[in-house]
Length: 456
Image (cartoon, rainbow, N blue to C red; front, side):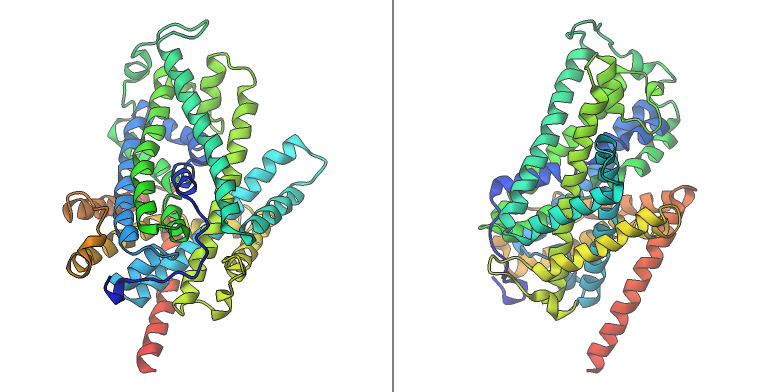
């Protein structure tokens, strides 16, 4: 392969294809689906199915672009490396640090939420004590061989996927009246209660804003691919299997929920899954979903810590982060990068516990729209790299973006549309403004570094 496109990875190749495939399936299935989907149903009604279809399609197209680039040039820095090669050092620096910042802030939300559930089960240990237990546990898991991270994620993801499959089976049987004490519901709840679009297309668009960020997390698959024996083949298979199945899980779940019950039956703050399971007579539905959400939170915490450590390690490799983070253990694990990521994670957790409605809220708003900025840079990188790869190493294009370049441009336009809509939404506007401020700050640092580099 052309020298400018190659990336030698010093990290251990301890992940197997099954780890990567399950990471792709489970990495994106989190509390946002199990609990947060209720907010989407509240604004879109049965039209939430279309909201998830639109948001999921955007995520699927972004992953296809990312899969194309990652199979051609796998690297632990994934899209940060691609942005650097396609656009310039400033772009790789910006997207890498923004994504790292996003992961370590969201990590605090997940750790705190998991600790809240655990504290309800075992109140003898205070909430901060549970946070400490989780952070220490997953720090140790990430400091040991990468296959330990892979095994943790494999079983976490297997439980989440199993829970959704079981929910889909039970829900479908209930829709057709095939469970005890149930009658066929037909299309009553899809066409009644205000119709399929009770709040019109405006409700569907508001639903997109509520659910699009639930698809964040798929990117970690392409970061992890660099630590498999055959990165190019592994990432291609993982992306192909993940995107379609995840779309099926999300859209299928929503279709079952709004078909089985009136959309007005959903209560704010209560998981729609719990409401459905209660309605078909599943005992202890609330506790069952609490366990699933708890596992989903720990899984996301584990994956985010992994993704953050590999991203900052890749930045250090390219001279965009302190060189001291490059120290690798005998097992091929970037331990200092793990510790640096978890250290900021601890700070975020402390801010969340101490000032959840002030300091941490500003921090959370500052990463609220970052995922869309990252996705946009992935699309721009793919537009620029595709021609170059075709020219220099066409044999590496084992996974291709559909209808290039038209679908890439359409995806960029869709993301721009989502950002504009967020600016018109009173709830989402602060996220765009704060995230834009954080992005501008990173861009300024990147620009200063670029100027110094040129002068040097």
